[in-house]
Image: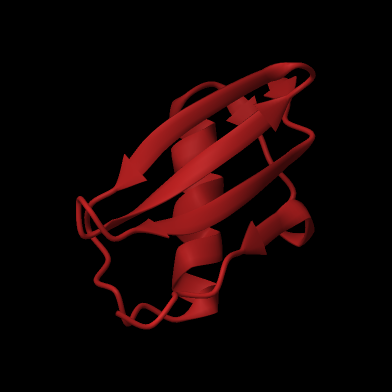
Length: 73
């Protein structure tokens, strides 16, 4: 399994869902996290990011996951 450098979880207001952006070298893999709502807590989002990376074939350290704060509407 390839090790991912880092990941960032962001709220996509237009699509009303969380998305994870997995950084592997110069490549960025962007995937939705459809199971979680806007109010999902950081531990749940961090775990979802690690799970999504694993599903894509990447090993991701939870400490390397950044959670972007949701901007008020």
